[in-house]
Image (tube, rainbow, N blue to C red):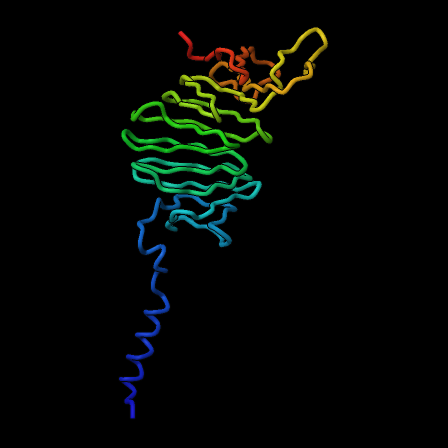
Amino acid sequence: MYSPRSFLAVVLSLSVATCTVPPVLAAHPPIGILTLAIHAHLNEAVAFPGLSVFEGECLSTEVEGRLGIRAGRSTVALAGKTEVTLLMISSGMHIDLSTGSVSFSTAEKERIEVHAEEAMLRPESALPTEAVVTILAPKVLQITARKGGLDFSYREEFRNLPQGETYRIYLDAPAEPQGAEGVGAQKAGGATKVTYFIFGAGVAGAAGTASWFTYRALESGSAPISPAKP
């Protein structure tokens, strides 16, 4: 017959077993920890500061939500109506941005890369980098390189985006430049391009009043024109 003390020991053992961290999560350290969570979610649960974030987990915010993550000495922030999935890479973090806007600040020798709409954004060096990546619409990105340049790639297209500028990037736009027929006019044909609108520093979102330049990169084999071309 079990004594009360023996019964209590069995109950405590079972309790510890049921609270053990799942093997998949226990096998890997967390990617980061939440430092801010307002109207935000970690997977399907309500997020709150102090929660650890593991590889493959989904973070999202509601319309009025905000969310902050610290990973090593680097930080990531999600604006409202944003959804991301986090993965580990060498010396840093990979962010799959599904919708919304994410900003990041990397410490020296730490790396954060963002994948959005099939395009990839990476710091151009191991120096501290600050940037904002926003999906404005399907195949339309807005990228602000606040500190440090960024390497942008999309399919076979590659560009360096120097710091201090905000870039509006249209992916898979028609290859024919605008002519006398008006905006959006194009000849029949299958070529597409990546179009870059470059705004002056600090005028992100002021497309109606800011002066801008357009850079077109044809995928039909023509030599591309780079914002960083010497």
